[in-house]
Amino acid sequence: YFSARMTVHDALDHPWLREDRSDLDSRIPSGRFDDIRQRTRARYAGYPDPTIGLGRMANWSSLRKNRPQEFNIYSSFWDRREAAPRFILRPRNAHVLEGNNAEFDCRIIAVSPPVVSWHRDNAEIRQSTKHSKKYDRNNYKLEIKRCTQDDKGEYIVRASNSYGEKEYAVFLTVE
Image (cartoon, rainbow, N blue to C red):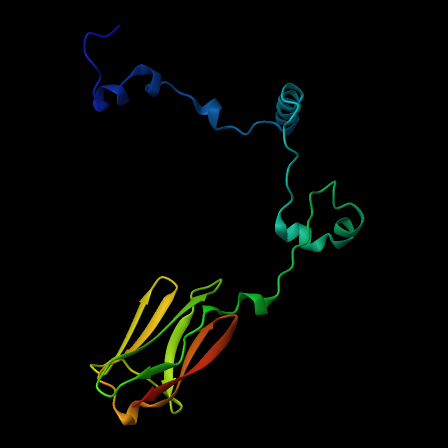
C-alpha cells in the first residue's frame, strides 16, 4: 500500500512499464485464436453467429435465395413515393376583411426534411413585411398582413425533398 498516490510521471517511470514486452506485439496464431473462440462459444450457449458484411451479402444472391435463415438474410423494400412529403393537415381557404391579416397553416411530414415554399402567380413568395413565413417542427405557416384586393387569389404551398414533391392550393378571398 502506498502512502501517497502516484503522479502521472511516477506511473510512467514504474518498472512494469519499463520492462521489455515485445512478445505482446506478436500476432496470435490462428489455431490458438480459433481454439479460444470455440471455448468461448462452448461456454456461452447463446453466443451469436457472426454476421455477414453487406457487401458480401449482395454478392451471395444464391445464399439469399436458398438459405436465408441460416445467414440471417432479410430483404426489405420500401417505395420511394412513400418517402415524399405528406400533408397531414392541409391549409384551408381564408376569407378576410380588407385590412385584416390572413393565415394559411399546414402540417407536413417527410422521411427527410422537406423544403417548404409558398407561391402565388407562379412566383415564390419571399419573406417581407407583407408576407411572413414561419415554421415550428412540422408546422408551416404563411401570414399575409393588411390584406388588400390585390392579395386575393390562389396560393400554393409546395413541399419537396430528395424523394419527391407535393403541393396544395388554397384561395384567399378579401372583402
